[in-house]
Length: 193
Image (cartoon, rainbow, N blue to C red; front, side):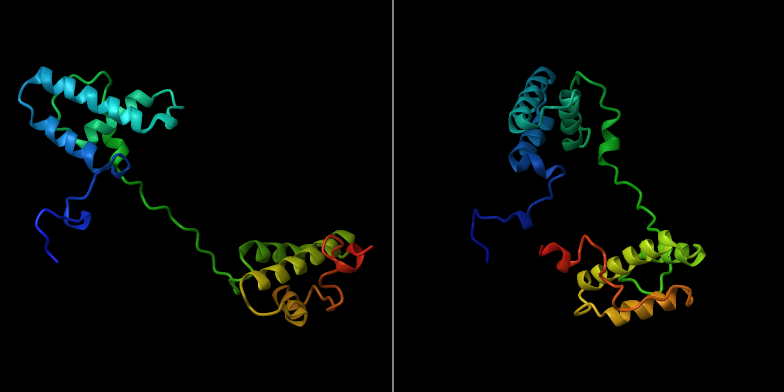
């Protein structure tokens, strides 16, 4: 479909800073083309005033004015030859994309339980029997049950949780299905009082 005088944003040049819109970008492009330096300076100051009005609610930072002038320099591709009231040499840093972050990939046997569960299971293997280990076992079993529900593996099967606990602790932790969900914060029988 090609209608004379009608163009789409997909057919236009992409905006460097879309938050200001195409009109501001067109103003900046026109300011770059102005031959008289004084006129170009006045035009740039007017553009910054319009940008300030557009972002009036975001004026909480101290360096707001500096940021506006940096944005003007970026939108012009540093082609706007004017006397900037601020140093714009750092403006290029704004446009740089950050380096990709390295994602910590740890090999865990079952992803839906997550790394923290397996770290806790390793800790449980080393703990001596007692109240602290029993309480931590109960908390881990409850979290495993929540994870199964959250990750959509059907109804949480207490037998699976018991088997997984025993398997991933090398048989050192053994509980029954009655022990799963015994946490008083989640026990429905105690909440109905």
